[in-house]
Amino acid sequence: MQHQTTFVTAAHILAIQPMSNPSTPDSVGIIAPSKVTFDDALALDCDRTLNGFELVYESYGELNAERSNAVLICHALSGDHHAAGYHDAADTKPGWWDSCIGPGKVIDTRKFFVVCPNNLGGCHGSTGPLSTDPATGQRFGPDFPIVTVSDWVRAQAALADHLQIDAWAAVIGGSLGGMNAMQWAIELPARVRHCIMVAVAPRLSTQNIAFNEVSRQANRSDPDFHEGRYFEHDLVPRRGLMLARMLGHITYLSEDSMRQKFGRELREGKLTFDFDVNFQVESYLHHQGTAFVDRFDANSYLLMTKLLDYFDPASEYGGDLVSAYKRIKARNLVISFSTDWRFNTARSREVVQAMVRAGVDVSFAEINTEFGHDSFLMPVPEYLKVFGAYMKGIST
Image (cartoon, rainbow, N blue to C red; front, side, top):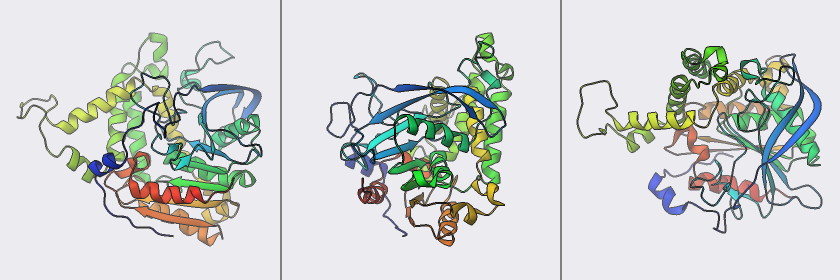
């Protein structure tokens, strides 16, 4: 199924989708995260083992008596477990996918029990570089093992077992989260009934790997990085992490959205003839970079970009994506965006075409938007319409 949509503007979106708050009927309200400790060892693809681990997660809605209505939400590179709702009444910004999760929304919490964990290697409570290494009593820091999407699937499966969920009604994600969902459908086919992948690729292009390496080098070349042991010096490699985020953020946007939002507008209305910030787009990127430093860890950023580079499900099947997809039992939905140049529509078509050749049930939609890769986070009306129609067809 290919679905073309009309072009929409940011003003149109905001008019249709007003921001919710904890008291609005379509919000999941105020949410408290949960944490689970797993004592069993987890063997990793890098041939190292975690002797136990912790996962922080949030859940929304209620698990039904048959335990058949559970949905797993997989976060993207810089995401976390806080996908919807608010942590307290003073919060001004909801979870990162609040536009899609809640009563009456696309992922309807009146119907589904929704679970979103912070994955291994993250920096928001799950085991990662900020965690204590039991072997040393100190933070893992740069000694935390490089994990893969397959490692994420195994850890998430342990969480599903803890919650007594034998199979997910759906596993859903955008960007890296969509790749996580794809890996679930391949590796544990009996535990996934529907797989929804938004703005994905079957593996990274050479250009994307190059962007990630520049981001890593921005971090590693910061004088405050200290080979990843910056915490021992009571430092944060702010400049490197800020530069990495600025570069990454450019790739998440489209030229159309940047031109419409900023154009060549000057910050102070005139050129200053120096190397300070002159243009509004420069100011915006500085803001994004500074805000990111305050909420993310540099070692986790290195891990997440490397994990993204390594994703290649076909590699276990002689490089044949069709063979990998022949394991899939789930029904699948793939959504791409017309202005996403990081994971463009051609990459989504690779996924769809390989699934068709593998005999897998798959539907596909390309949505015309101006927002680039970040469209999967935006409440674009036609995107929500296609996504929502599919979710309504999932039986529980």
